[in-house]
Image (tube, rainbow, N blue to C red; front, side, top):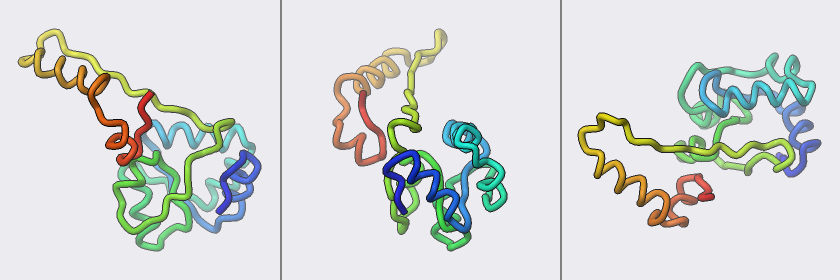
Length: 135
């Protein structure tokens, strides 16, 4: 399916016979808002399987839906499915992850070292292999 432009993505959603997205989490909340903004929420939700949690790719793999919507890093955990790409920049959203150390952490130095690794030492190829894009 073509998702290269906002128009193509919208057309793909309207043409697909069935799809899945998650109710909870960042990707599900974002997608629910996106189909509202695109003016196709009623049409999409009429053929959507909305899961409370888990991986939409599992439904795709079992043949229960024709299209699965979720963050790339979550889709990548399901072997045997083809990921067609990310949303066009005009309608997509970058999810930024943050880290903090609890004031009463039992091992604050280990937490600090891990955070330092994520910021400075993590291999960008490794992150990309897991569906994450370093910024």
